[in-house]
Image (cartoon, rainbow, N blue to C red; front, side, top):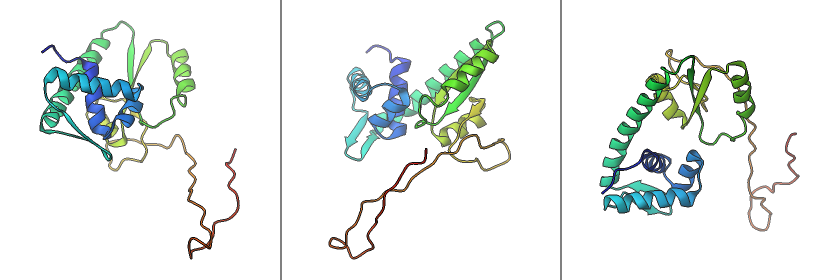
Length: 192
């Protein structure tokens, strides 16, 4: 058995944390087949089933839960080591930013480009994580800044709104023949 790679551990952890291959693929910015192949290769390499797959998503087996605990510890230590070494790069500052998993990829492109132009000695490390994961990383000092879906509770973190998103409620149109409820009529136009 050869050693596991960091990328394989990240893929496995993402699949378990996201509860499925598609969400993990989005988080990792790779294709779903690539994530599936990575997990299958990991199962073959270790000689044990790590996940139980169903229509509702994936759940770790007992072996999978053991690997999840150990992989999280290894990844945390790996990221600590990278950050520690990065502090020794002459004149370089590392800014670790947490970004929600479902944030459109081009939303921050301009802001990060402006940051790079204004502070050329600052390196940005982007961490894709859900709000709860980002809160844990912020409290543990593993992130410098987090873009969260909700305002955190408690005095240990400062928060300010930076973006609002518009949501629309959609439902199937009902007709009087198929349902005794009121019919939905009219058209919806997206603001813009």
